[in-house]
Length: 252
Image 1 (tube, helix red, strand yellow):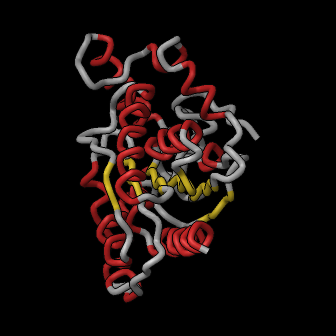
Image 2: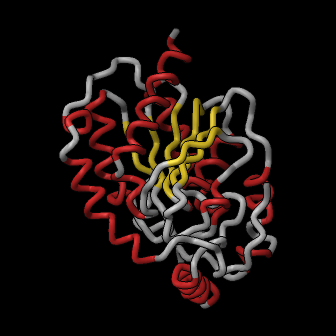
Image 3: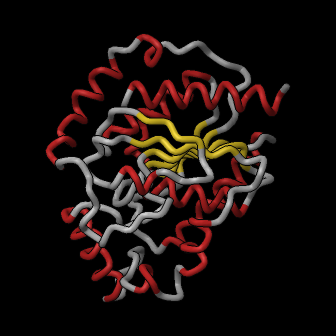
């Protein structure tokens, strides 16, 4: 399956649905398994990659839950995920290598939205360091299969990059040479022993859910807003299963 929507014309759900974020967060905070998860000694280390225009603090709720489970959780070192994809992946790979070396174990990568696409490519490049990659609302089949409001934000950031502002993607990143390898890697098959899971929502108000259906990944559907993927109870249930299974797979 491939994404064929014109940029800014993705058939995303109404953007107002993103207002659910606070309700989704409240439900998560009231969930007993979130507040007091059973502590696992076998959880793999986890590297978290935030979404477009977001930084590591945007995944702090998820990081806290992982640590309560007993997992070693680390951020991608991003203040704002807005850089050229090739440069961003390079920095993620450095963090990945450091976390794998510190723990002596394969890492699970969890990325939200654009962060999932970056995580997928980092996993593709480093199959010996990665156990699994979980992509939360990540339009890997069409990175610009987004609604018009989001496309406007992308174009604004690209304009800043075109003007030479450091840490910003540019217009060339879409179809120029700077990110040609990244675009190819997004479509490349995943290594056989690296598990990929694509979590998507048909009521996603930001990206096309069809663009999230990576053919190399297991698909897990939830009823979540796009921004709420990192604070939704159903997403945490999927992630808990992945962590349990990956912990068993690599420790016996």
